[in-house]
Image (cartoon, rainbow, N blue to C red):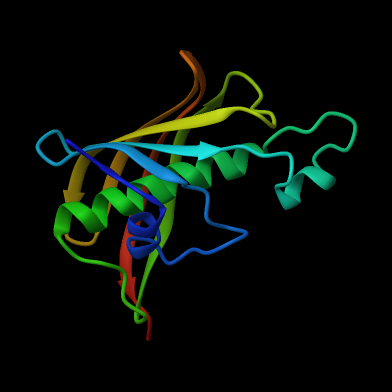
Length: 149
């Protein structure tokens, strides 16, 4: 198992601020095809000014995006490649998404992702997001690596 700092995260993802939603990888287990990534949720995030001004809550779609970014790191790292300028990593499906508790400024979002199945350029992942020991969201996602034409 190994960790990754923000510099290695950036090397394995094409997203950048304000859309980079992974700050660090706490665990990467190649054998188990599993990753645990962290997002430090700050009140300074641009989406909090409108979601919601009176009670800031991290949008569920951004929790799903953090899951996809953790899955992207897992895919690139497990294949021994890094994202190229002519390749994108797309969401192609989200199943069984459930949101159980709100994520608010000051929380540390922990995203655990496991590869369930890989077929050519499409991968299926099981994802769980936690704050502390509380599960805040779960989903099964499908992502594809594709060349840009």
